Length: 430
Image (tube, rainbow, N blue to C red; front, side, top):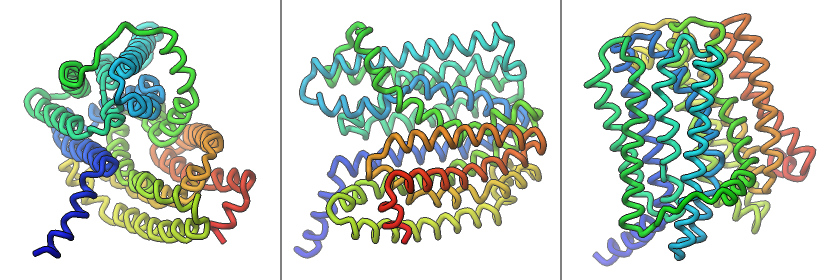
């Protein structure tokens, strides 16, 4: 009896650890987003058709790109500021007020850019109204208080709220989206329910946590924007490189092709989260070992790297072999073109795993400027090569461009590391 109790106590302490709780709740948020996305795909394809599904995803890609502008690095810098001022309600109130004000102003700027492009420059013609109705997602992003609850180490409420908003979105699809003409309401519903839940969370922050909302301090907002500039450009470059393919394809293909490609791309992007989650999981232990036991660090990272490559290869092989089944389950129809795209893109998770070692070395050695340079070199390569190959070969060319980008970024990081710190490269790869 006592032995069982002693076994339970460490587990209980482990679960009560706030860092572990933050990680688990973040994993819940990400998993629920992926799950709802996968569930909504067959519902949307059946309701609005493959071509409108492609346009909806294209509009969503534009919004997500502009959400990088709305976030502007606050999602990385703001949790630290909140954590530093947890015990000072006045200082915390100023931080919260300025961050929310800054993000809302950026959302207004992003909306202005969309409206100017859509109606002033006559862009986005094929999906103009879908995109205009999607701008609510910008304000949903601006009011999302995830960064606040991260800093306060109270992630339970925001994770539950996120799941609830996604379930409301799924219910909205079932109740209101029944024909291709209603495709403009898909992203609107996502933004509407997200914004509504976020406003309730802001009410909770004010009423129950005692946080006041002050007038925006322009000087403080401007300073935070300057401080976050490098983070913003790094995030922007990484996002374009990983998620910009659909936008490039839109210049050379019809809506039906976009729908076929976007279905395959969504599956691959979900699988590609694997190496990113591994880096996030091993980073704390890797950083400690790097500081205290360099040889132990290399042994640890090599062991992780071999396992990551094995599982990455397994994931890619599984995606290739089961591509027809995956597409059939998600679309509830036989979409041969989507199957081909998915099989072409299936090596991406494994190729992304190749860079786990390099990225970990860059992070533990605090070589952020090298990471910034690598991100933008990858971005430039991806855009140039993908545009050329898509122009020549359509969707297949884009797949080849994305695959080659994963290989090139591995080589870029390796070369930059070798030039900056050869000892790191020899220590890990020898």
